[in-house]
Length: 157
Image (cartoon, one colour):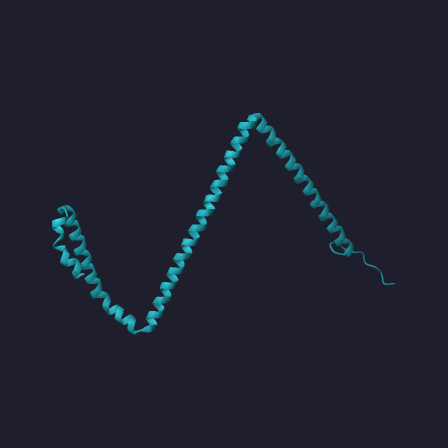
């Protein structure tokens, strides 16, 4: 600090007054703040050094804060890449739809979409009928085992 103060007298010869005044004001304010903090924080630091319990608690708190900051950075990095992929898929899909419409024309595009809807509705109907059939078979099996309905009472004699 004394080194800078020694050369502070030489600076007006090499710097214009506007830069020198700003630099001089900033440096004197910083040095004053440093001295004030040093005077007020020295008792706190001596107390922390002399009492290891407080030191260990402060170390745990600092480690916790640093780990939370690292976790936040990792979360932001992952969310950036997820956002990037979502945007690329969205704009890529829009571009593919535009090229498809450009190549086939509006009427061809509408016909293609209608064919796709019909195909997938047929597939849906097939799968839903298979599910209904499987449910009915399961109900029949359960009824044969005696679950799900009242069996007639048999006489013992």
